[in-house]
Image (cartoon, rainbow, N blue to C red):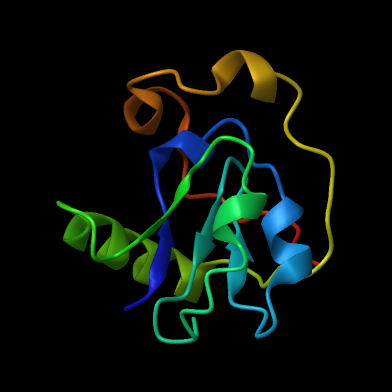
Length: 112
């Protein structure tokens, strides 16, 4: 099992999860975070730290898409281990549908 970040992180990008991760497996894009599924040790400490509930175990239905999504972008983006401010409209975007099509881009974040 591994944990993955799903579309509710897009346009929110809370980073509370990165501070509790014991293996530093989070990677930062411009509009979201991802977890490298091969580095995640399945401890689950990140999941309750995510305000918009955007982190899920890969055992939930239809997670194969998100495992591959997280794998792809964790290779392209820099690691993030330090908590940062969420994106400016994070509270308003929490729970919004269609975020992948509306707000996602492949640009890397700053990491750090």
